[in-house]
Image (cartoon, rainbow, N blue to C red):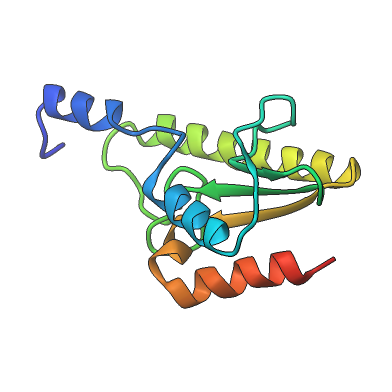
Length: 136
């Protein structure tokens, strides 16, 4: 049984957005502090990446661990209600992510996925982004 009322759950789910999330803002702030310029949510590019560096042909996706089933404690959470619905929804996200990354790489783009849990640790986030930018 859900601990929230239907109205509370609706309000909670309605407040979840795909753009300008806290993890995404952390990534953008760090990249901006290094002096890099980027474009956001470019709809011309397959998958509509969160952060795009057209000149370098690099893109960054900032994924929520739960929604994209990361193999961390946040991504391994199993909803208590409507399990089949959520399992199908989340697996669909994972499959779509794989197809998008494969197609982008085939088109010559370098792709980085930043997981929400990595943004909670500044050192991990810094290391992942640094290796992405230093890889030519």
